[in-house]
Image (cartoon, rainbow over all chains, first blue to last red):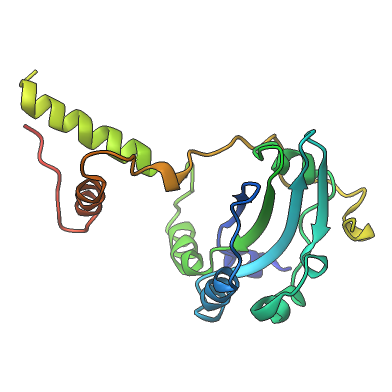
Length: 152
Length: 54
């Protein structure tokens, strides 16, 4: 990949989506929505694996292609870059509860690439990023309400 | 089924144990008016709806 190619690369994120034991109802909806995001050019799927953690905390990892019927994901699976290494598995599975199954997705935020490139061309540097949990927004709003009520 | 051999022996990209994130599904806690709470949060993040500071 040339420096010019790298300049056009969007930020790469990962998600670990846990399905607690007995709480998964796969209907293909997840695969369809993921495919929609890729086809819309919002993201590019770089890698995907499936993790299981048994009741004793023992972790197993498998390729998406070994996880059963892929449905809409067949086309995407064939194009995965397999960025994750075996040594990533333990770090990723650390967040999982015993008895759960999790899907790990690594993806490029294609939507952000032009903006990130423009920022770099203007001399800007990304020095921090993050996510604001909904819980924190609720806490902030509730604190505002309390202030309004008490006048403190 | 194990991971493909190509993944073994490579340097990983996730450099530290991942902590469990707050589960968004439980953000709207059961209460007297969870729907109303969702609406308030929705309004708070709607462009053009500035928060007022008293």
